[in-house]
Image (cartoon, rainbow, N blue to C red; front, side, top):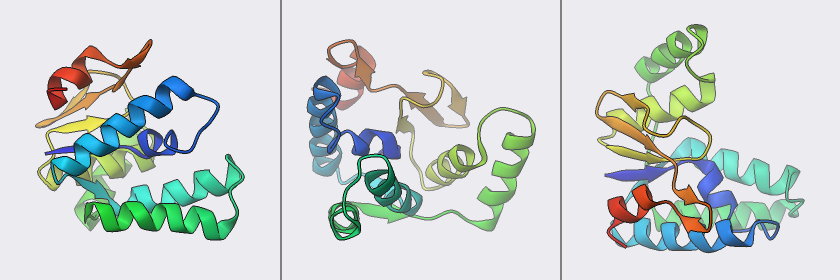
Length: 148
């Protein structure tokens, strides 16, 4: 199963990056077609970014986040994920929130995690981090993964 980080979805509403907006639309459609799941953490992070960085009114940010919530299946973090995230964070491997999301994605059965915020090709068990964005749209790795 393939999942995506918050930053992928933020580009759906970020008019300052038109090439990434186009790529994010392709990704969201492809993920929806594959019945992919997203972390509940993504919903909270998304509405926060939409309100604070993109200056959407709270009702609009909530509705946009709610639309993702109804489009995708979700997975949650466990106490074990939180403990592992603390270990990864304290070792300097990634931030706590990134670690919580990737460990919960891995435990939900995801094998690919689309994000531009972590090292492309990094692995956490069976989960591989893939940067979905290339210089003019989707990266070659994302195109191959999604068979687009």
